[in-house]
Image (cartoon, rainbow, N blue to C red):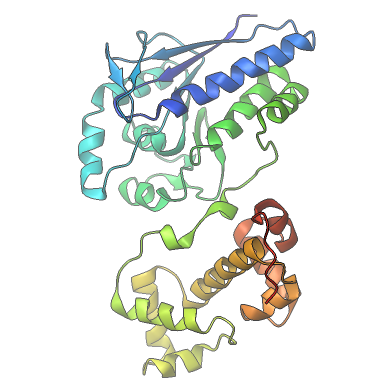
Length: 330
């Protein structure tokens, strides 16, 4: 057997850490495998570019080689510009888009890290395929490339030889998956422990911060959201909400849905979960008390909704994310 040939595509403005993150973990895995007496060939990693010189985000120069045949091509992410400038940024990366398209056509498995998915989509690789990216930019990817079957909560999605990953650290989830395939679960598990990398993650949902997501900016839905935010502990009553805004329930649902892209109930559930996440992270209050504070009299109902939104039950979430020294019970 020959070493697995892994190429990392460097380009102007890419994140240098995402260029070297996967190769570094593969190097660690090769050492772990050798220590276990695994004589199978390891990895042959090359940083490639269709350009002679490449400066990463922040201006750091990268040593690059010419593009060559590979088993796996990794496309790192970049610093996303404001929405109006994204098209211009992608247009400047025409040589890279062409390289991605050619490598995939030659049978190379193509992988994107974070917003590197935009380059794969620009190359046409994601049309009709399932894909993911950072939760912060998933909506922008979906709007620009409607042919993508977006899986916004997934950490790693592979569809017919093309793999996309969620934000930054999801490159390690992919790397561990590659190590698992190439050297087996034992080597992957040991590598994760040495690197202090979580090898049991399945979703990026627990990391989503709705306060950072773009809002449609329509006054009616924003007013309804503000009212709901101020009454999270109250029972959700659609008829009462409609009366508060002097409209029928049908009009409320229609106008809110058109502006916000969801129902008021979906919004209030997400807002309650967001508030509960904060309380789980920063206080020692019981799950039952937190449930009541965000409008759920039945802790079981709260637990089910919380798990559906975050992929974790409340106690599991607290164990993962509670900030050191949290003691407030009031």
